[in-house]
Image (cartoon, rainbow, N blue to C red; front, side, top):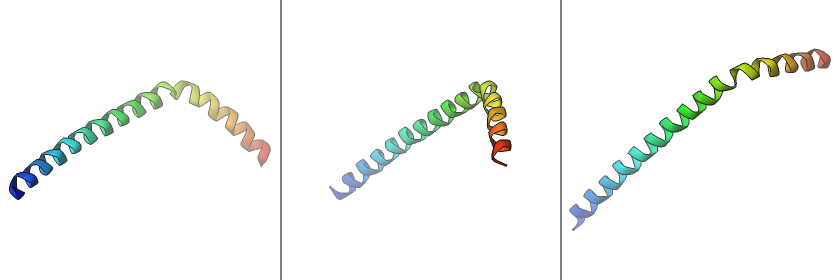
Length: 57
């Protein structure tokens, strides 16, 4: 019984690890998509931030 229990827990662990790995890969892919998508507008925001920084200095 104990052997069967350990086998089932190891299967659960592999299943959870696989789901976690998939979630991580999807999150990183979405993050890359977001960063590449907003790269055009981020340059404009950086210009505004630069002006604000000059005023602060």
